[in-house]
Length: 430
View 1: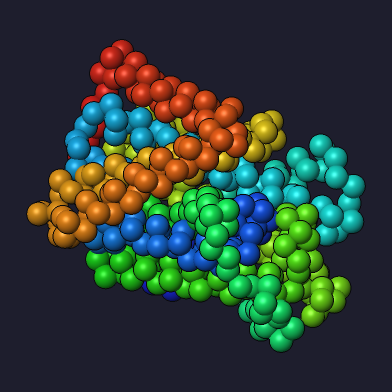
View 2: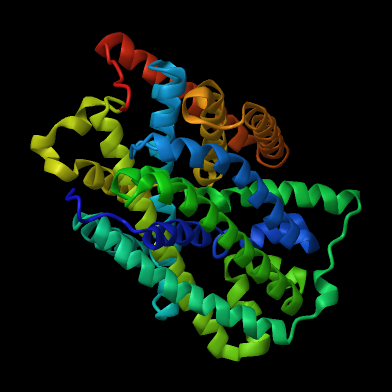
């Protein structure tokens, strides 16, 4: 990667915002409304506070430990070369592969009805293949091409969402947006905030591109906090407009098309089309940013000895093996796997990684900075979030709960066997 092809602060923020909004508003908005009810805006606010708890450590460590391995580099510095670090690196990379598959499926789900094609296994597979190949080709030209494309994609998407927000405020029914804090609704608010915690996880892509960012010591903390606060405001405004223009039952019924249907009362069919286009831009930007982040993780962890040797065989993949391998597995998963349950588990995996980042920060705070009391307090909050998340899975989707446990145990077992029979040692990042 040439030094003059570095991502600016605006481009990095665009990548994070593109991933966060794409992964939330257009995909799990209806589910969040079903859980949180009238307390939807408050659920977005609370989940944003969870994200800030994690962001405190990401910003401090990310400005000092410059590595595209991101949180794995933090954990490696904090707890060293061991089976836990190796297992977490496998899980981290897997979440990006799964996300790529999910975004490809989501794009196909919106694109095919939009152009009035019949939804078949063949048509869905073709769209998934084309969209992943397109963004793989874009990423081939390097981080600068990704950043430039991401900026314009996010600009278009946000312009559409701002039209939705301003138009919706004209006809909003404020009585429908009043929060309810009885026991039932408070429980829904807390559960909804845990689900929407997923919607802020895109800020992690910033540290996964730290080697490609201009002035990372200054721009990484700025990008993390600006992107989270900006997205939090957008989420709250959109949820207010949706609740104020569409009944809760209709939002739940519409699921991922809720925003497009909510635009009809004040923008008509034009609004429905406009928001559908916004959804396509949103998912595309999320796929773009996630593919770039995932490729950087695969390559950086391979380079540092964190992934199996196949990733380091440059005679197969030359200098972009991480990109090709990540995109290829993502495409295979999109074409052949049902990822609904696995996608739900992604939030659990990320939360586990966040917990170990904070544990590592406690060990590193004297060296890299940070208030130890604040970090411990943040860790306790995150442990409660994880417990609540597992409890929610147990109550609503026991199979997903069991799959989560199996994935964690399998990652540890795989890492143990790999170390035992291959004798792998992990390099400490500089």
